[in-house]
Amino acid sequence: MKYKSMLCALSLLTFSPLSAAQEWSGTVLGFESPPDPVLGDMYGLRKLLNDNGFTYNLGYLNEIGWNGGGGYNHASHVAYIDQFALTFNQDLSRWTNIPDARIEANIVNRNHNDDLTTRRVQDPRVNVNDLTQESWGGQSITRLGWLTFARSFDDRRMTWRIGMMNKVQTFDQIIPCDFQMLSQCGGKSANSLTWNNWNVHTWGTTLEYRLTPVVTLKGGVMEQNPDAASRHHAWSGSTRRSKGVLLPVEIEARPIINGLPGAYNLGVVFTNAPQTDLYRGRSGGAGASDPGGYEKHNRTGFLYAGLNQQLTRHQDDASRGLSTSFSMSLADQRTNYMHSVYAASLRYRGLFDARPEDWIGFGLTWTDMSNQYARNQRYMNTISGISDYNDAAYHPVPGHSLNGEFYYRFRPVSWLELQPGLQYWHRPAGISHTQDAWVTELKTVVTF
Image 1 (spheres, helix red, strand yellow):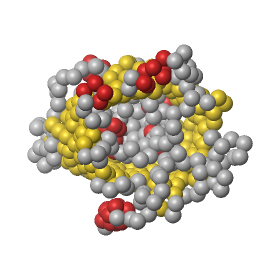
Image 2 (cartoon, rainbow, N blue to C red):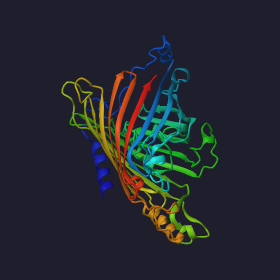
Image 3 (cartoon, one colour):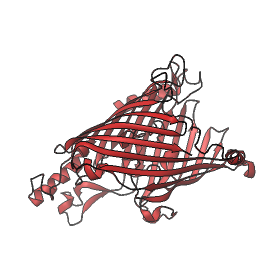
Image 4 (tube, rainbow, N blue to C red):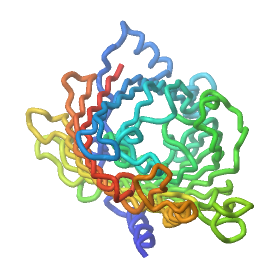
């Protein structure tokens, strides 16, 4: 019933007379214009590139986490990761006469590969359902995030994209990645575990069509390749080890309600790539004892949805105010160990008159782990005869978890952002035996 309600709400937004009355601005929703870079105009080089259709953003990010108390391993540790990211577009229309044609690319260099979640916060015997540092992953490596050709049709109402792509180019774009905790970073589409965020590419093609000034319909066909995040695939265009295709469909609405902008989406992802059951074997019993191994499912689906709505506007500055976001995902718990995830947050831009560009944010995430995954963990303990949680061979049984984060972000200078914060982990990874954890964080962003 609740999914029908979401569809009804999006339908109302499609035909809402409030939609195009004002110009939509996402500043208070977390979508700010790029700041003045530290390198400035580079003696006219940046302007020369822009005049020739080449635009880019080069940024540096680091994320630090320290286990202030609790968790699986109480030994103090400061975990540090960082990355450089170059994202650029090259306008092709002036040379090809193809309207609004462009080449899009993203290259990411990640370093240090030190994650506090797996080293201290959660029990390493169970799967990760959140991260203290959202940009951790993919090892210390330089890889191609995407390289695509795109162009528009029908007076820019339709956009077509093809190439080695990433889902974030098209799908689930309504919530920014400002928090350091992964579950509060953007939407929940990555929880399908069949495609990757940000710096991993696979082949595909997508279409976006703006049905009204407010509502856009999105769809695509993308390669489902579980090997895409491996080191040898970092710059590869090979489809070796591909298992099938992904068919994502999303409807996105960006209305203005009571004079305040918002963004809403509802998406589904289907795949024909075989997914392994988390408990059931080919013969119907437990897969761990089945000679044929675990059952394979040839068709699985995944649902995600979200909203990001401005709630207040400062009387003297439209770029200051309060916003709220909510995102959720629902997966096939036969094959996905994260059955459902719900995240809610509040953000305020310019809370203090003396600091109009500072941000303050607070978010909570509830995660329910798969019953099939928990069932398999119990069965593994039964056949091993181990019931002591402290035994290294014991398989912990996950349930639900609740994580929270609070941060404050400020800019000492235009090109530098410093974001200290605090995380609280209740039942890390869904394990009740693991002590609740406190994590102190610091996120730093430099724009070149």
